[in-house]
Image 1: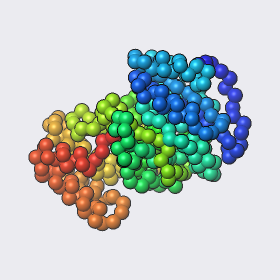
Image 2 (image 1 turned 60 degrees about the vertical axis):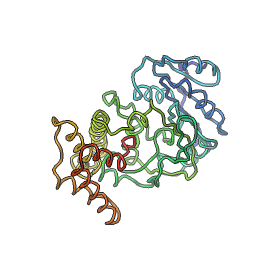
Image 3 (image 1 turned 180 degrees about the horizontal axis):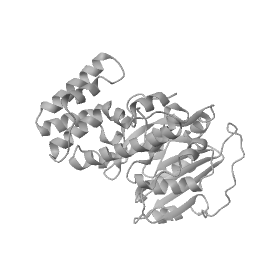
Image 4 (image 1 turned 135 degrees about the vertical axis):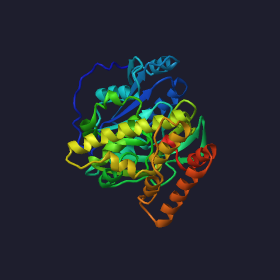
Length: 344
């Protein structure tokens, strides 16, 4: 494989000619999926493109798979340090004006790289996103990620008003990023280890420019027991705690970036407006008395801060009341139908 020690020559192509695209695959013990992922990138009908695989200390067959592509990809192996560290390393070695991060258990669909590259040619665009086909381990479930309409355009006011998770979007492999944006936010802080790297980028991107949505599906998203979708499938004490810790870290990071850019940011306001976060805090209190919980009035008030029609607010208020009066097991079941932990 190609050495990661190479010239840091900057790309010279005009932004809308055929920009160099860097596809960075992040892998940790996904050797059984990795070949399909790499092949999906190499089959993309786009030039110029570089493929970089960062292995984060895998102990399975990943190294053998990666080494079988000697001369066709760039690769780097590091001791296990987490996805943020691996993503930082991948960006460090990339050169493209467009950068696509791909989880090794996912793969790209034909035409994805070209579509992303063209979308990011539009003035002011810093992020391109595509819908993803949902796979149940190896087979298509027929589902789409996200299931609802992905928000796009100018989202700065929305993110400043609502905070982390303010809009619906696809996970890592369904996105492409303008290097001009990434250079403003990388390296991602090591202190945020455990927080999904795609969430940090999605929170930050609206502060720097526009998002474009590609209407066709451009990637496959695999649900299995070892990735975020599998890990956060259950509404358990441990999962709820982790999501709330991630939310607090994301809020601090977003507020820091916003303030640096001269915007007003209020994490306290964001939480007070987020009925999902308040619901998780309430459930945490039900599962363990050592945690605090929002009062009923504050919890219900968040439902009426939702954008949209009144009936939607009333439905959410009804869900909140149902969760607060139901026995704990039933409250958890109700919450799991309304709140997808893997998307928070």
